[in-house]
Image (tube, rainbow, N blue to C red; front, side):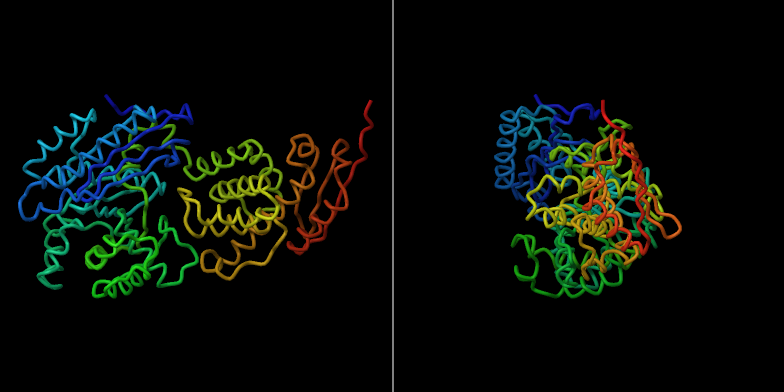
Length: 499
């Protein structure tokens, strides 16, 4: 029998599985790696559409149940073969609302799984926890769109409250919209007013669900956005409504939205219509798209307070760098040594600069002809949790400068300010100087300092590290000084003779 367990973070080798029995799809995800920024080891789904017939019969159809149970039987077998015993199985709107839901869940239990039927409030809360795990300190409203329902939850950075569920899942929207745009809008407004929903004005609205992310991809393509991962993407409400209004009346073709299934494409106008009504009624300042939701929220709820308090971005970058034999200690040592050239180093910048340093050092483990491009791809396209497009551009610019280049790509200026990107160049050039001078070794770094004061960039080197200062190091020092519009200076003490 599978069971769920407390996540303490004591081992990076622990694996945790979530089986999500949704109204549209039945999915299993196996997570491993750092608990605070878990890596996906297995992700499978079957579009069983358990909730498709609910509006007509109030029951789960035999065909849908057969498809779901077949998938769940496969998942149970796979998990046994993988040796995964920490498994949490949950069921949501379709199983909750169907008259034959208990019968279906009994069949699921016969497979050796232990399904837990979530209430609407529990479903909303779990999704909100997933968003807070992905965006530490997030405040606003979480809107989770599934196949059978829409959940709204208020979050204040630490807690989730006022979670409600409404019958506006993607499988039901087409029938609601068939009555006409005015009646559809009135139906959604009535449900919001009946729930006494008044939160979220002027704050971000975090959107969870595949249909929302598909809309994000459409908008990113429409705006010719430099990046293509919707997780963490923020769009102002006015622009969102303008774009998504077009979608409500459009026939979306596959070429319009990359990497979207035909079934998802067909539901986009319905999802866009719902989102426009929500945006107009709730009046959020912006829309933020999240790949983390219910499943990650369930994991987060089982983490110890110590694990929950970790920085997910640093947890993920550190674990990744360690796969390339770059330790957190090495990254911290280099980041400390280069701190002397930073104009400001507030805590938020410190964490980002440490991540940039770790990725820059990890890039040195890659073949030279691939190094810069690979590091840029890591920065811009790996699914880092806890940062947005602005921070990604800063990480990528650091990687470029670590390769000795200082030209800022035009597309990066759409993601971050020129000031931030220029500072990232400083980080990259300083890291380049550090590694080429010291080899990132503790002893030479302990016997040297880098400082920038009153227009002068000074590298001070004590005796044991003196032989490491060569023409190549001097060239890197001059390049950094030129970038900072400073005068380079080297203070060199004589080497101490061995013996």
